[in-house]
Amino acid sequence: MALRARALYDFRSENPGEISLREHEVLSLCSEQDIEGWLEGVNSRGDRGLFPASYVQVIRAPAAEPPPPARYANVPVGGFEPLPPPAAFKPAAQQPPPAAAPEPFPLPPAAAGYPFPPAPYGGSYQPSQGSDDDWDDDWDDSSTVADEPGALGSSYPDYETAGGGAPGRYRLSTRSDLSLGSRGGGGHPAGHPHPPGGGGAKSSATVSRNLNRFSTFVKSGGEAFVLGEASGFVKDGDKLCVVLGPRGPEWQENPYPFQCSIEDPTKQTKFKGMKSYIAYKLVPSHTGQQVHRRYKHFDWLYGRLAEKFPVISVPHLPEKQATGRFEEDFISKRRKGLAWWMDHMCSHPVLAQCDAFQHFLTCPSTDEKAWKQGKRKAEKDEMVGANFFLTISVPTGPGASLDLQEVESQVDGFKAFTKKMDESALQLNHTANEFARKQVTGFKKEYQKVGHSFKCLSQAFELDQQAFSAGLNQAIAFTAEAYDAIGDLFADQPRQDLDPVMDLLALYQGHLANFPDIIHVQKGALTKVKESKRHVEEGKMELQKAEGIQERCNIISFATLAEINHFHKIRVRDFKSQMQHFLQQQILFFQKVTQKLEEALHKYDSV
Image (cartoon, rainbow, N blue to C red):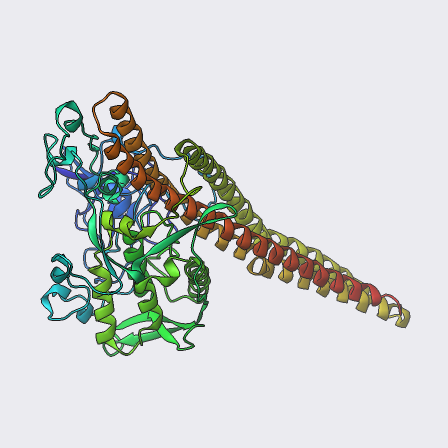
């Protein structure tokens, strides 16, 4: 049986040793064993090389010829770094049936020359299995926090007793005397008997469970929460407050805002020089104490936050790269991408105050024990899944309720907005990339050709030895130098204006890829509310049960609208600032060009 794979997404090779893929293309695999997240194979055009394992699905079909021999079987571990899975990618074992998958936003055809393929929508974060910065051995031990006496993040059985508890900790539960289909046959959760007088048809009605167990609504815990199955202790520090602002629901502002700079990326080594990595210096403004973090630390933090906050858009990290990780241009570009990422993290009222993020910013770089404890605490966080929604506190009282039809209309409007914004961002990114390429190559070459022609003319005039022509010869030679310098200005200019615009677009494309899942969770909650209302109208469900479902749906709706409002707020801030910077740099550029031409013009005054 020959090993084959089908491409799930388009992939464009950008480095030596890689091959490009087209969606639905069938490839021959050299080996099913991936090399740090990469597979080797032959595409339909006969090209052989590496491609991301997450972009294909392995299939097996009869074939007469054996697979081609692997050329990269002896590549040492850590030699390659996989690209992050597309936003929509899920492991093959967890792929939902195509008909049951949520409908993604349609994307425009990929244009030639895109610097990177657009990430498909509707996915959730998949932890990296092979980055350019491997975990230290002492961070990968198999012991868990539960194994250590008094370790952080352990369970709290003492609070289960009646009247038990401690200041700042509250027992919250969505469990009620509901008849839930998840318990089978309309049964109740353990310890919750049927309510008095709740017999007959009403007590047998259930809100159906989603049969697609890989739905984002199910995996995020949203379904379990809406159906009343969440139960846990919520500390004061875990509360996420939504308030009513001038634009509707908003996350409560961080009372202690701060910023964090990312500076001085330096190449460091360990294992006596056998392992190299890049470390970045972080300086949070609220502590003033610098710490050093590697990309693997950012990657770990992103994974924890993406898992914990299903209704918050966690900004995507800059893409990984298999080769050229220590080249100066790549390091500079990654630092700028991480700076944008850090700015969005610090600007978010919820993410900025998250314990895992604060641990990432404040834990001393040299204290491995403290880092390990904080890392395990984040990984054993109990306020994830359905329990996460228990931490959300929403406005109450008159005028604080949401109209579900209005909420649905707002969410649908935002969905249409993100679709259009994504299409325009892709188009602008392609246009900017093409324009930058022309400036770096074409414009520079054309201006220098003009300069060379002027230089040839001045050299011809120098054959005339008359004294009165010397000034003209020098002026023309200076004009040639001016045009040559203008060519260099064109080549350098994209770094000043177009590159920052494309960096911002890349960050927002990550946000836009997050929102389909966020919207899917809210839409799933609305579906449960509509179903429960229908049961009430048919006399199959008690009104109290349906009101409980609607109340929990309101919590998800408040959080979704708060996240949408935050997105618009930072979008206006970022694009205003970036467009101002772009135009300022354009003005400075043309002022430099004008200055060069004026200097050349004045050379003719004395001729």
